[in-house]
Length: 85
Image (cartoon, rainbow, N blue to C red; front, side):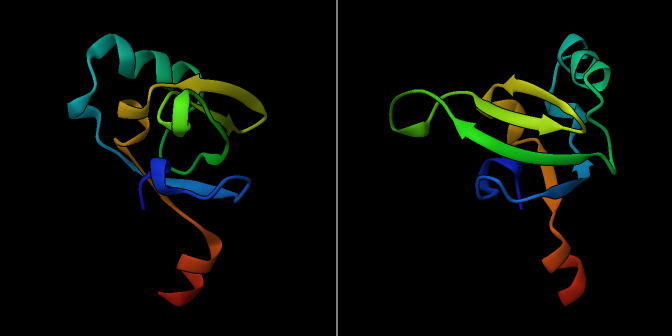
């Protein structure tokens, strides 16, 4: 599932990042925040009107806000998905 679809406060792990849809500087910034395959993530809050704005995420021990388009480029897996596979 995409990070944008992850229920709030549900721990997950980054399974895949589609770096090709991000610009070089956007990808570099996300890497500097520790966002890479295998990193732990948790969606904390959906901002904006009707929750269509930026997403506040916990990446490791850091809380960051990212654009919804960036979050859509990130595929995550939960422990429940791993157990079902």
